[in-house]
Length: 261
Image (cartoon, rainbow, N blue to C red; front, top):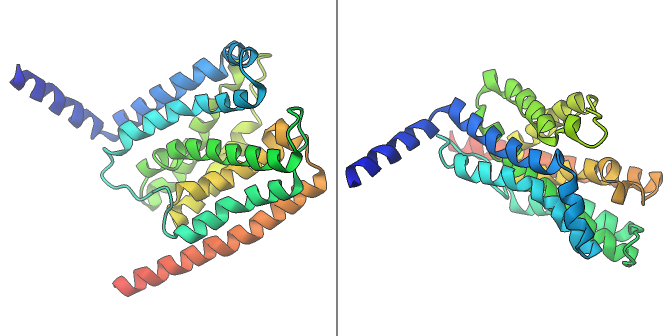
């Protein structure tokens, strides 16, 4: 019995050493799980109808579980792993992630939950960053890691963008609107965040960058309750601080590389 178990275990390990199989398994887990939640909106409504309003927001994290499971199962089989939660510079990572949270806390977000706007701005911005961070564990934390080298990098960005689009299952949601406009948008976002990941190696920083679009455009709970002026201030302030932080990380990275030569 022991011999049989060893052979089976060895075969599984060999299978996960194959890049195509790893990516296929990740897609099966992540897309399959998100199909249940994005494609079947009644499941959300079932939970929401019996859940206190603010707590119900936490159920928005459910679709990311498939990404987390897929990434954690498969990532350890990668021959090289460069991405980490904090990345190359912990201080810069914390600075990057704090900027949108501080902005929404200062401006405040009006809401129907009878929560003081500044407090709600703090809570909803933290939630949005966490949600984006969980997504980024799958996209940049694992899937982008499969595409190393100059010859694969740009293909990897496009591939991640396409899978990112499929993960949302727009064409199976209520109303049947496929939102095809989101495909080029997510590919472009994948390129941008992918480059940030290449420089910083930080999933947390990628999550912060990802969360900004959710805050000012995608999530109506925020986007519909802050003014256009506030959105522009948040956008400009984040970009300025982030560019400074990412350039500092890049400069330190080059300096470290030069010292090791």
